[in-house]
Image 1 (tube, rainbow, N blue to C red):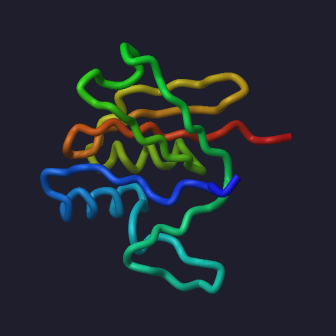
Image 2 (tube, one colour; image 1 turned 90 degrees about the horizontal axis):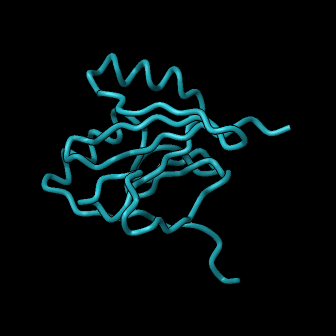
Length: 126
């Protein structure tokens, strides 16, 4: 297969610069975050750690994310408890927390424009 992974996630925003800054400040997500194998950063690219990713269509009437949204972003994290504590300290509401045997732990937040973000800490392997 020629597809080797996700190349990006693009979505509409009312205030793209402000939303980009929010993601970078609170989640370390977006252009300029992380470094490549040579330790270099790039203002347009987010260098991520390899690992599992789920690509899964949901039923059109799911209640797992808001009906007025066609998608939900899921971010794989390391250290969910510490991240949730930092988000709460910044005044960001955690709207759902869940443990799923064999899969991991989850927390839901919303960005300033109401987009649902699912934070996922996979279960440790082995």
